Length: 291
Ligand code: NAD
Image 1: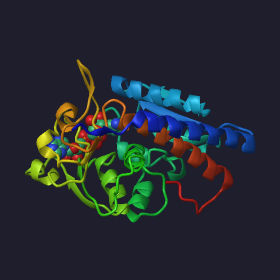
Image 2 (image 1 turned 120 degrees about the horizontal axis):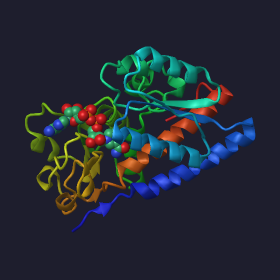
Image 3 (image 1 turned 180 degrees about the vertical axis):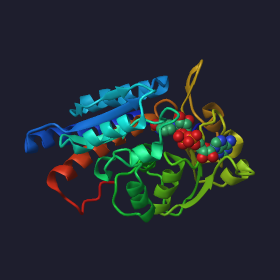
Image 4 (image 1 turned 90 degrees about the vertical axis):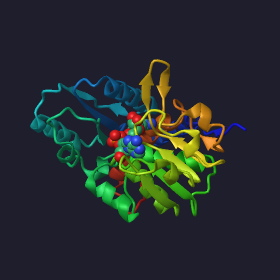
């Protein structure tokens, strides 16, 4: 038996169309188009591609593009000043500081310059604290996209045994928190986990976010499990994930492909966070749940 594919491309397309409609309504209501500010520092080729894709998708959804590309040698103060400028600009609804930053720049300090209300990547301490508490806040894009993929496939999260491989601030940790908020019993495996196979073998939902190509094999997966592959690796034969798709697809019940799984959802969620931030910013609502 071959697992059912969870189609992130299709889901992302529908989500982006909804965001486009919301942007159109926003423009009609407020008389201006909200903007997304992307800040890229240095010349990391993968980051350049990611930022280009995000800007293109944002423009297609009707957002104004406030992109700035700074050289790798730029000082931290210049990046901070740029973030402050976007923070003060009424038209900028969302600010995205593309990671990783060049060596020498303090990532945490720079992320904290972004006001929580414009933190469309959900990475500030305030938004991460809100996530940990389970109160409304802008959620990190890739983790929120993972949950949406599970919901689209009607996966029962409540009560499920979920294992997240990876504990990064950007992906693994927030995915685990979101699953916990939805009532899963969550295990986080990471680089110090002694026996990864025994940690993953009982998972009803397995999220692979280790950044290690092909780490998850058929032997890691319970028959019928739902497998979400967050990993992205450029190889000579194209994009690959953390999961050995060909063999795992014979064991899993449902699985996301790479490409076409989590990746498109990351951008779709970014756009949704941006229109949500714009709507909340323009109306001054304080009680609305942006997640
Ligand atoms: P990271 O390097 O910050 O974190 C990796 C985590 O995996 C760490 O917590 C580490 O402990 C764990 N890990 C590493 N080796 C392991 C092993 N052998 N066994 C178990 N755990 C191990 O990476 P990240 O930023 O969280 O990204 C993870 C992957 O997801 C990368 O491939 C990245 O490119 C990809 N990614 C994809 C998207 C997307 O939109 N699809 C977005 C962000 C990141």
